[in-house]
Amino acid sequence: MGYRVAVVGATGAVGYQLLSILAERQFPADEVVALASTRSAGGEVSFGEDITLKVRDLEKFDFKGVDIALFSSGAAISKLHAPRAAKANCIVIDNSSEFRMEPDVPLVVPEVNPDAIADYNQRYIIANPNCSTIQMVMALKPLHDLSPIKRVVVATYQSVSGGGKEAMDELWSQTRGLYQLENAKPQQHTKQIAFNVIPHIDMFMPDGSTKEEWKMAEETRKILDPEILISATCVRVPVFVGHSEAVNIEFWEAMDEKAARRALAQAPGVVVEDKRDDGGYVTPIDCVGENAVYVSRIRRDPTVEHGLNLWIVSDNLRKGAAWNAVQIAEKLVSDYL
Image: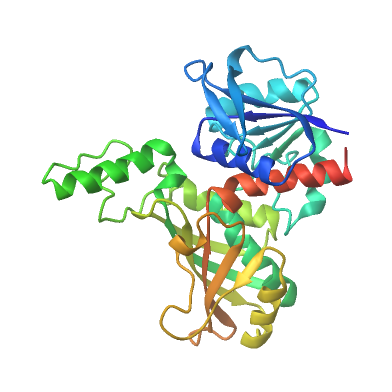
């Protein structure tokens, strides 16, 4: 049986990846509908190598008869249109932050908590976690199963693609402009992003943390364990694609470094590449276009009784968004529909 699938935000960076992965995976769809804003309606997007789809207007689209809708247009669009799709008995897999922390909406990373998908029928909405959360919990899960995690301290190095196409364009234009002695005036970022790093992603909250940092903590607790303590510092860096994280983990009990390495190497979707010599680790440029979460620099933290340090890298547009969403859709089709 084939399904009718809609991709909302089909003209964006994540929408492009969603269409590409659906085609790569030969997802069992009789029809794929590309949806975007009124401004983008009428254009065309690629679906695989040989097929183009006409972009349709989301505002006017009727979701009746659509089985699954993959949303990647931001929280405001999801807030308005995801409930409309769900009301038509279309299952929404949403990449935005709009529904993630609602108790009756499952927040899913298929390699970590696939059973949560079963609760989709409460609202007909499934939330995709934050891109940085996804790659972190992928590495934390096998370790937490081995020895319970007490506390996590993470610093992220997040690429500009996390801010969308306009943020990527700004990095490109600023870099080019600086070489031509032009002024790099920021528009998409709060400060110049070219040749700089910015410790500010999303809005500031009353306690001084940013919303991105709050997301990482609360989403990880919802997915993995509400008892884990998490402190995050999220930083935007001048990289086009690929998020990196320096993660310090404190366990309640002893954690053997070799056992941790084995557990990570055996975890689904995780690749360990950790040689203690020049270049024996993964960087963002190495992970572009890949679906895996890569773990390097695995080492004991000697400053606490049971501590471990990791370096985690992943393509934020694929595993951090589109690939995770397609995995959820595949699990829906195989186990629930």
